[in-house]
Image 1 (tube, rainbow, N blue to C red):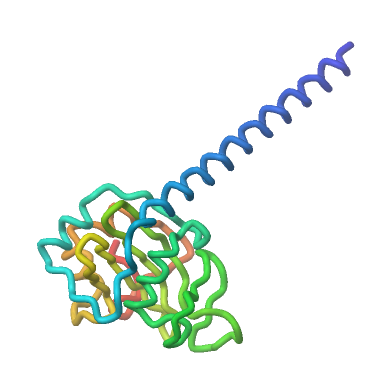
Image 2 (cartoon, rainbow, N blue to C red):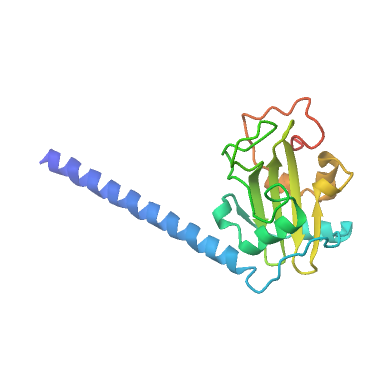
Length: 197
């Protein structure tokens, strides 16, 4: 009798775990579908788009966002606009980036492996913030902010402001979205190499 009770308990627990896993999967798919539909009626931001002013930048970064941490959930319009602002595929138009935790090319170039790694993307109806690492002699943390409402951009690559000061200009955006990575040592970092603590 006790063996059948144990077996029944295990079956019930496994069924509940399966139901929870299915619910989490459906939630993630629905969230990704909703995020991709945010930009259906939006044109991508063109190359050479004007810069976002500091006052608008502060408004954009203080809005509510949905955070995406996988490239498959990044909408096509955001990818197209990102490639119009940043160098994609070493100057091409193909969106090339790897997911967080995956290997990227650095100063040691790996054939077929992009030199950019997503940290996270923050999305809302009017704008998108893409925070990513760019591989090189020293990996750099970079940000591209896309304002779909006005067709303007802001990015850390085309500003003379080093990242720690840029985060202050963003009105604390980085502190709101910071992702702690315990294996990262930021002591003695070059400007832009690590996020402020």
